[in-house]
Length: 340
Image 1 (cartoon, rainbow, N blue to C red):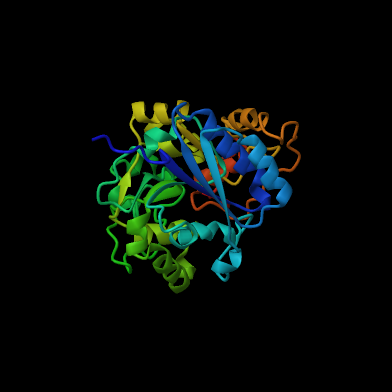
Image 2: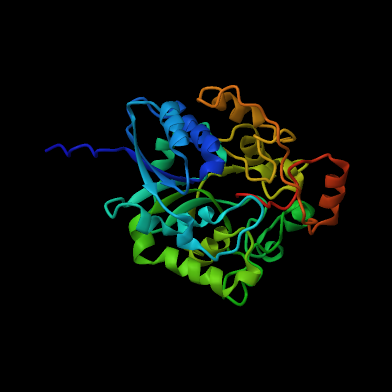
């Protein structure tokens, strides 16, 4: 007896407010452009303040019979009081509440930040085995483990180009393995049933409130604390963070030659995770055109970059990185003050 085909082949979720409406349209349009022709995709948008006009323009950009869109309104007040900085708003923390915001019938989901462009069929990502892990994610390239000096074999060759050695500064007090991997939360495959059972969201908020003086990169800090040892590693091409372009070559990076070249030259998801984004007129990201090309296929076509990126107010911990910044040689080397 043949089993009935599930209603949807994959389920996605993204979060946006009005300030990221255009970016949301681009991200999801890029998903559709690379989706298998026979695939059926269910998309949940957590609406943290999108205007009616922006919703309409997004629907126009995504018109495709393979895609079913559900809008869920959520107030950032649900996570009020958590620390924010730069252009990052409290809406960023809503991914901690996916278990409550999404229907109870949703047991698995791909979470996507909206400052990205997809270049590969996400059905391939969906089919990555979760096994007994709560989530799958990509090891962060700028901060690969809780203590790079202890856990990164290539530390001495790349230490001057890391974003930080310790993305969870109080990892010892929390009993975390210094060699434990640290992930970037911009792209995740989530076992939502396990997420619910293990109360990941409420526990993460407790961590943020208890250790706010140690928090780097907002909810990503808490997710790495709660999910330490409970997540699986994806191919880095599923989340090419901007920091890959900060390494002069593979020799000064945590990667081998082949992996470095694949990640830099053939990303499956380009995540614009630095403070300077493709919609800023001074953006130096080498994949800026990938964003603008998708943008031209949406109702935002004809939009022109006019505003510069945010002024970076924090001196990088590494003096060598600061010297490069001052020379203007690398736009992507500053410690991220934006969405990661």
